[in-house]
Amino acid sequence: MAPQGIIDSHVHLWPKETSSEDSHAWMTPADMPLAKPHLLNDYYQASKQEGASDPDVVVNGVVYIETDVRYDRPNGDISTWAKGTLDEILFLRDIVEGRYGERDGGVLLGLVPWAPMDQPTSVLTEYLVLAKDMAGPQAWPRVKGFRFLLQAIVEQPKFEKLTSSTDFIANLKLLGKRGFSFDVGVDQHSGGVWQLEAMAKAMEMAHEGVPEKEKLCFIINHLCKPDFSDRGHQFDRWCDAVRSMSKCSKTYMKLSGAFSELPSEIRSTNAIAAHLKPWLTHVLECFGSGRVMFGSDWPVCNVNGPAGESSWIAWKDVVDSILHDQAYGLSDSDQAKD
Image (tube, rainbow, N blue to C red; front, top):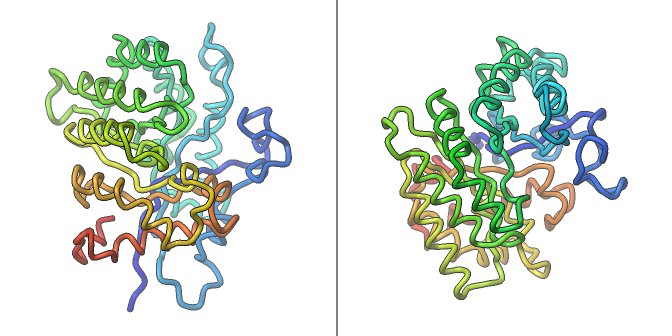
């Protein structure tokens, strides 16, 4: 049987120059496993795209997601205070233009950099011009959307004030008008289910009064990082929020990132797949197979993954187990969509 071809919708990369706390505040302590370069050559090894005599999956391409690079407090010239995020785009340009090898330039199909969604729309507009200049004519067409990592805002009043603000909603509408997507990074487990509820309202507001062709495409990361230990009231609220999000047209869910939220005692592929079933059943009921996409969250998946630096394969095996579970009733064509 020919191997299944996939697009990995959620991959992070960074060079040696930014593999430290100086560029990524979350790279602490200095000896943490992610505080080292992670490039596509490493990804090929992790996903068994090299050296496997009979691979069951072939990665046809990846989508790069911004890595929460440090930037200064917004003040004055955006090219100065957001230099780190613009340098991130320059790194992606180098890959696309072949400076890391011809293969890498072909594999990196989509780019989702950072954008200043918490700033006035005039700042976002200026940033998009700078980002286009930094990306250059080859990489800019591969910029499919942007992300501003909302999950880091753990104070509920601050989060709700931002996501309901006139500027934030206008920024979302601007991205939609420009034909971009927005990656939604919210976190029930570490933040609270209120993050999902507030973002669901923002998504609805961002589509109000907007022609269908200009409505922003929302791509939700990591199943909204559920609290996989709770099947009570919080689970019900997660279900309601996810259902609300799914009602927005042009909205997709990534089947990704679950290792970070799972109870530590659940380690085997079958046990993980079984534990995820209530959440995945709901996601598939809300979104259908056509609006769910595979993402590995590599290399972050290695941190709490059951197989260390081989956790890409572990997640692929979990997803494969899910796709072939008759309880979900997925046809061959459904499985191919995922």
